[in-house]
View 1 (cartoon, helix red, strand yellow):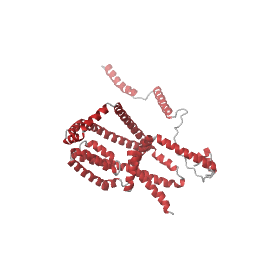
View 2: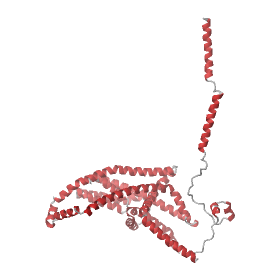
View 3: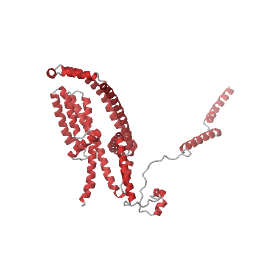
View 4: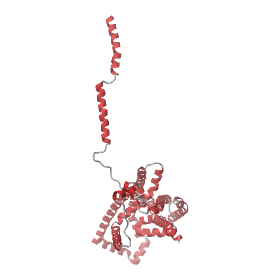
Length: 439
């Protein structure tokens, strides 16, 4: 008994010793291994943070520093603000413009450059149109990016958000619209034979056929068309041409989107480069005029998009109420035409009126009254409030510029006509008229 009691007490006394042994600090060998692992990890991190041997920072195309001609040559040689000039030497005096060699050489170079620019422009018309469209979109998104920058959002993030919202909005719009367009176009194709049959069976066509022999004439022309190989080849060529046009349109859309992204990212640098091309004494004025023009163009694009969206929404609601067929398809046409200022809304109204006549003159009359009344309300209440920070162009100048732009560049020319006219008017007022007033 005594031995067991002593043994148990001895066992209880040994338990804390074992626990103390488990919680005791690491042995020197373990601590040494952990220290060496930590040092190796730290050395690896330092190696990864160091540049590769022989690596150089990526070259960037930067604006050269301003060169002040009033600085002393010693200061330039020391490498101050004119360090770049000291690297390549100080610019020498210009050759006299009255020198015969100078006049002949520069005249020849000028004619050659003019011919080169004409040749390049005539062979890259499509690319120039893409560039103009991308620049137009970039100027339209610039106020949005500037607004995000004022909210302390970095410019790259603001550009990404603006372009992403634009792409999602356009993609979602077309994803919703295309199935409906396909369905409604299919309905038109299915109903077309019925419409033709009803027209042929009508009393008007019978009288016309008895008087002029229209049915025999139509059958004769159809036989000639079917038996003509050139006509059938023209149909095949038209299908191939439509496919190539569609592919070219998709490719152009991608190019315009990428260029818009690049223009948005490089717009501040592009402005600085443009201002540096002007003489130093006039840079402040050039910068003020350019900023006013770009601000007006950006506000115009955003405002016109809002006006077109409201116009198409109202037209769709009225068409759905009065029962105009193919309402969603026609609303898309109205939105596209409403982007063209002044005349776009009138053209859209006439197009929808012609379609609504198929349902009866009462439907066309109700839609015409509602839509043209909305155009007046838009012209005097909606558009002035949306466009109050955009451009102000006289009505006659706006109509002439839209017609001229549409004749030169199509729809894109009609879209950019009013901002271009506003820029020209601003330059004439601030430069030519101001100069004339001094004499």
